[in-house]
Structure formats: structure tokens, C-alpha cells
Length: 365
Image (cartoon, rainbow, N blue to C red):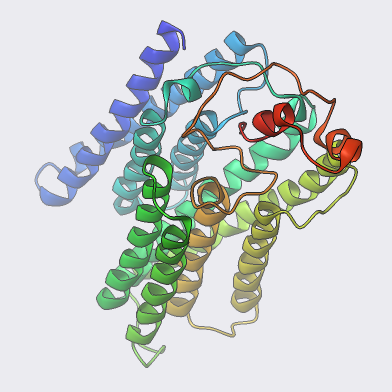
């Protein structure tokens, strides 16, 4: 990583933390609230500008589209969350969501900064990623994930403003369990069944408890802020869902180009389909008014957990598959090319993956 990239990345990371504290301070001080909100927003704009600059600088230095490994995808995710918040903030008064958006971006920065140094460096692409499909398929997915994170955050705010505090607490526990599982799976040697149980079990128990804790009556009046965050969550999903659809379709086209099949039931691509179905269910229930707003907020939070599992879970929870692009615990120096031209040719040669191809296939985006 060049000195320019390092400076820009540090600037963006520090700005996200400063923005978080400025938003928090604005809520604690009525006297200086207006000024602090303007300061927080200005810092967030600076964060977005620095992120944009570092992504462009990384692309120029690499001589390719800068989205090829986990670290680069985290930069894009932070960029998407900050950009999505700023875009929505032009239409909606969502100042109280600012601290959550800043905290989310800061979490992406922190997670990325803890990755091994090899993830930060610009390296030659493995052959499976040397394709024009990469810049067509991956960016819509990453931006859709960012919008889904915003929808989940807005769902938390909607439940909070609707006085469903117990549901918020249980849903927060579900999210905490999911994040803990991802963190442990990334940086520690923990049994994969324990990690998967923590993520899946924690999510199901937390969301189930949150559902049970919801008020029995859906007719209780909601204040304007609650309705506002419900609308923001809905709009975020309506932006993210078409992008996810594009990502799933182009992923099939790329898979056919690379592996000779549109769909192989790989765990990560199957989970992307499950995530798509989850948000399709949300849209159906919303359009046909088959579920109250509070329950729909929990569906949005469940969608955020599905997004986390699709995006980061399969890299850290041991699910494996052809999309195991985030494995870096045992980094090795790899050859620049496959022993065979593709994994498909490798498998066709004798029905098994040779050592060279296996090593290269285990490290990528």
C-alpha cells in the first residue's frame, strides 16, 4: 500500500470515528445540537471524499478495478454505507441515524485494519478473477449490502421510536452474536460448528424473542419519527433489492463463463439467493399490507443478518465453497497462475484438484 493510500485510509477511518462522536454529542447537548450536527455531517462528507479518493488511488496503482479481495470490499462497503446515508439525508431528516451509519463504517475500517498485511497489499489477480465480469458482478452486490445495512439500522430506530425497547434489545443481542461469530471465525481458531451455532442460534433466539416481545396490538399510534424511519428502511431496501438482483444474475453469467454452469449450488451463491428471497418476502408483505410495520422492521433486521452471513459469514464461519475468498489465516506465497488454466480443467484432468490449483483457489476476494 502506498503512502498516499495509507494517509487517505487513515483519514477516512478517523473521520468515521469523529463523525460518530459528533452525532452522539449532538444528542447529549441541546444547546449545541444544531452546530454539532452540522459538524458531524461535514466530517462524514470528508470521510466519503477520502474513501472515494483511496478507492480511486488504489485502482490507479493496481491498474485494475479495485475490488478483488476482502479488504477492498470492506472499503467499498464503508463507502456505500456513508454514501447511502448522505443520499437519503438529502430527502429525509435522519440525523439520529447518523451515529449508527458512522459506527457501521468505523466497524468496517476496524475489521479491515485487523486483517493481515497481505490483505492490504495489491497483488496480481488469480486467473478466476481476471474477467470483465468482476466489475459488473461485484459492485452492485456490495452497494446492495450497504443499503441493506442501512435498512436494518433504520429498522432498529423505527422499533425504538415505537417504544418497542425490549424487541430492540433482543434484536441487538442477535446482531451481537452474529458479529461475535464473524470476529471469532476471522481472527481465532474456533471450531466451525461452534461459530455456526453462535451465528445461527443467536440470530434465531434473538429475533424470536424480539418477535414475542412486540406489542400485541399493531394499531398503537406511531409518532412521526417512527414513521420516518420505517419509510427510510423501506426506501433503502427498494434501492438495494434491484442491485442484489443484478448481482445474482451477473454472478450466474460469470459462473457460466468461468465454470461452464450458471448455477452450481455453491453455499455462498445459494445464500445470496436466500437473501434475495428474504427481501422479496419483505417487499411482498409490505406491498400487500399483510404485516404490521413493527414486524416488518424485524423482517428487515433478519434480512440484515442474512446479508451479514452472505457477505462475511461464509468467509469466516467455515462453510467453504468456490467463493471462499476471505481465507487468510494461513497465507502462503502463491504462484501467479493456476497449474491448469481453470479449476474446471483441473477437475476434468483426473477428478481431483491438484495442490497448486487448490492453494490458489482458496485465496481471493
